[in-house]
Amino acid sequence: MRSTAVAAAVSACALLAAGCSVPGEERGFTPAGVVAGQRSGGSQPAPAPSVETVAVAPGLTVQIEWPEALEPAHTAMVKALTGTYTAQWRAVGSLGEDESYLGAVEDAASRDAYTWVHGFVSEKLSARGVAKIYGLRVASVSGRGAEVDACVEESGVRVTDKNGDPIAEQPLWTKPPRSTYLQVAAVRKGDDGAWRVKLFQHAAYPDERAKECVR
Image 1: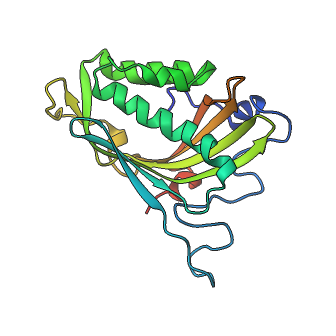
Image 2: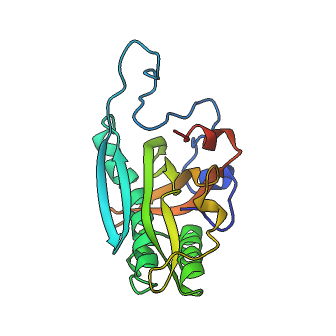
């Protein structure tokens, strides 16, 4: 989910303990279904991701591609991102009535998520179609904090009025190349054992990391 104001990567790392790496620094980005060291053209085939389709509202779904190589210890970290992404679309589809997404975000991420959802609600807008999230991976872990990266593709989404009819002027983020971007989330494990997103950052076209998400 795009934040309304893109925070610097260094700010995301400040939420974590020392040792967090800046996105893009001394490491490459691995697109969906590709494990580091097994990119296209390599000697070993990339494992196929499993696809989960989540219905969040009538006519609106989120398609999540789960990587086969995801370590068990990283699953909860990744679900902190996919969970809030899905929940925010559920909030949009319910015209703001479903506020469960607020339980999965904190601090700056909470403000960004609320602002994004209410950008729809205040204009009495909703959405239909399919939003896709893939290329999921944990980029770094430091103590109770981690950075989770994902590719997002939203060209299959159509913004609608409250009756479900597509509006005449669709926003630019629904159209290629801006419909594909890299989402970065700084997540942290709370005292209750739950992982929540504390900060969102995204790299949009023409950023090179966003281009790597294009299929």
